[in-house]
Image 1 (cartoon, rainbow, N blue to C red):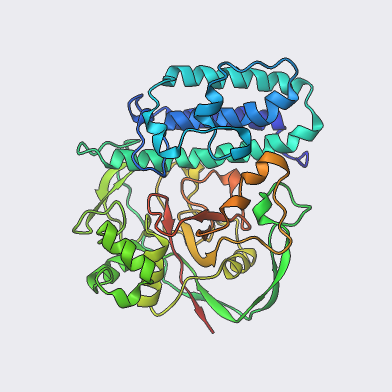
Image 2: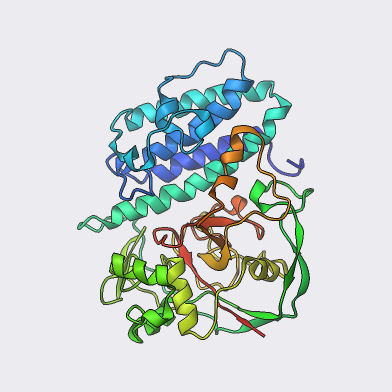
Amino acid sequence: MDGSGPSLVELYRRIRAATLALAEPLAIEDQVVQSLPETSPTKWHLAHTSWFFETFVLKPGLPGYRPLDERYALLFNSYYVAAGDRIPQPQRGLLSRPTVAEVRAYRAHVDAAMLRFFERPAAALLPIVEVGLNHEEQHQELILTDAAHALSLSPLEPAYRVAAPAVEPPAPRLDWRSFPGGTVEIGAPASRGFAFDNERPRHADLVRPFAIATRAVTSGEWRAFIADGGYRRPELWLSDGWDACVRGAWTGPLYWDDAGQRERTLLGTRPVEPDLPVAHVSFYEADAYARWAGARLPSEVEWELAAAAGPTTAAGALLESGRLRPSVAGALIGDVWEWTASPYLPYPGFRPLAGTLGEYNGKFMSNRMILRGGSCLTPSRHIRPTYRNFWVPETRWQMTGLRLARDL
C-alpha cells in the first residue's frame, strides 16, 4: 500500500462485503449448483476465499487462533498440494454440507479473527493479505461466471438480476492503431504497487511492426463469420480446435441460440446485440475468426504495448458499472477478456511466491493461453494493463472475446 488509498483493513472489509453482495441475488439452491467440472458452486467460493485467509494469515499470524471446523481445510483447499488434501474440483457440487448458512458463519468467524489480526498485524504477512484480497476479487468474477453457466441450463431462463433492456449506441467504426515495433518493455515494475508474481519481472522484448484493432470484434461481425460457414470450415481451425468444435457441436458462442438471435445472460435471455463485443468464445474460435477475417490475434506483448500507449483511463464496462454485460467501448480495459496468441509461460527471470503460495500461478504455465484486459465482471481495482489471465483454449463460460491484429 502506498498510503494514498484506503487502509488494508478498510480494503478487507470492503472486498469481503462485496463478495457477499454478489451472492445475494442468488437463491440458496443456486449457490450449491456446480454445472461444469471446471466451475464451482457459489457456496464453495464463499468458503474457499475464507480458507485462504485462515490458512495463510490466521494460522501462522494470529496467536491462539482456532478454526471453526478443522475439516473445512479438506473441503475448501483448491489446488495447493503443499497445504494438504483436497476434494477434487469436479466433486465440489456434491458437498451438500456445510450448508450455505454454515459457510456464512465460517466467513464471519474468519472475518472476526482477521480484525483481531489487524490490531497487531505481523508485518511479514501483510503482503499475503494483499494477495488474499486480489485472490478474492478473482473469485468475485468467478461467482458471476459460474452462476451464469448454472442459470443458463434452466429451461425457466432465470436471470441473476432483472433489468430492462437498454438502447445501445452503434459500435465505433473498426480502425487500426499502428506501432513501429522494436525493443519494448513489458511487465509490472517492481516499484509500482501490487502485481501477481506472473506479471514480473519487467523485461525487454522484441516486437515487429504491427497494427491492432481499435475495438473488440462484435456480435454482428461474428454473425457474418457464422453465415460464411465459419463453424463448418476446418481449414480455418487449428487441429485441436476443430476437434473441440466437433466434439462440442459448436455452432456459435456458448450462450447463443441456434438461430443466433437470442442469448442467455446474467440479465436473462435477451436479443443478441450486434454492436456489443462478442463474448463466450474459446481461444480456438477466436483464432479461427481471425484467420477468416484475414488477420490474427495479437501477442500479449503487442497487447500490452498498445495498452501502455493509452488512454487506459477510458475503460469499458467493469463490475462497478453494474451492466453485467459488455459495452460498445473500444477500450482495451474492460468489456471482455481478450484472447491473445501467446501461451502462458514465465517471463525471463520469473520467480514464484515463496512457500505454498508459489503454487498460485507458476504451476499452471502449461497448455493455457493468455487473455488480457478484464471484462464487465472484473472489479476495477483488480485490473491493470500488465495483468495476465490464463485459461485452457477450450474455455467458453468465461467472459471471453477478441481483438484483431495484423502485421505491417
